[in-house]
Length: 284
Image 1: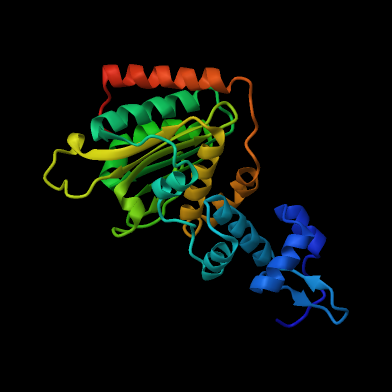
Image 2 (image 1 turned 30 degrees about the vertical axis):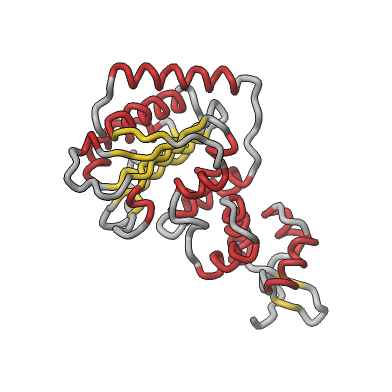
């Protein structure tokens, strides 16, 4: 780079990313990252892109990647420590039980989480993975209503391209061979109560009826796990919706607050899920 008189000082990068000066120096020494400009005086100057890349590394680290791998992925511009929400959460919480459920039950569980998390939440971040666009279109009226109560909402499916429809979630396309194309997910991050559910569709079900397709499913109401799920989803959306992701990046970089109400909310969510399974739900 050609040195300029502009740019950000190291302390400004520290303030904006939360990474200490010592860590920045270690990363630069060991990995050549970030790559600040050097003034004739020897002082470092960083760009806005440097700040964005450092934040990406932090989010990738939160998905379980080692520092070196996180830096390599951020540099390469690949939006995501993993192209799979299911795999990312399994690495974080291997002790969570995996249950095999048909899609009809997965829909009921998803509706329960959506409704419980959206109730009274003013800071809701909402993410949904639908696999196919037709599945999302069937649920679009519901998700438009949910998104109106959300600070930000994103949906993933095999859309032809990204869209930002007025009054609806941001639509993020998923490639046919992308691991996320085999996943069904609902991730809700909110101060009122967080939860996530992710299902991975077993292969070889091309002839099965849609409602009977089997998924390996994990779910939790743990705030830390839901926050990690939200970070992974943001990484997956970053290349198609960079401005929207950047608006919530600082919040997602924070440690989720604890609440004495967490147990009661988990019990409330579990009760709703049982009720929705008992009464059934229409396939979205």
